[in-house]
Length: 193
Image 1 (tube, rainbow, N blue to C red):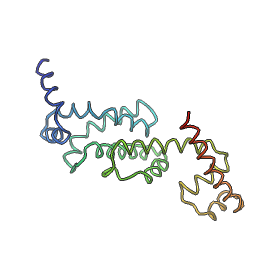
Image 2 (cartoon, helix red, strand yellow):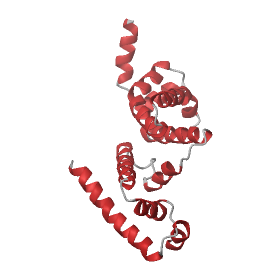
Image 3 (cartoon, rainbow, N blue to C red):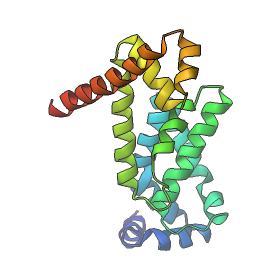
Image 4 (tube, one colour):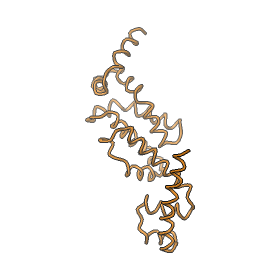
């Protein structure tokens, strides 16, 4: 017990890179320290994708179990960003296995910067902002919502939207313009409250 506390104090002061080196050498204390440092972030990310605490916990635990092997097969410059990217990919693969539509997640990732260069907190903040936009889109009138989703998220042209919805071209343009304005109002109101 006393030895465990001494080890924890010493290992707690190591950098991520030093912990990774020790983990590759088989040091279980290094694995535990990485878990302590990053399990809350991984759990939050898994919860965002899996939408269920038990599923998110299973994903997080599974990821940390695979971590030593994944680390030994990778070149890691920034562990936090690498872990975020690996966690996201694991969640998306799991959702695809379960045949759950991942288009919304993948679309939101198009707007995010490359995690290899971006700071994790910045990426998480962008994802939170995108989530706010998704909720705001849900508050739009059905016609505006449908046109905004087709135009911005699915990159459909005006003609494609007309064909898919049956709305007149003038209406499609109007729904998109009014939808953008209403989205801005909804988001401003939410940020004030």
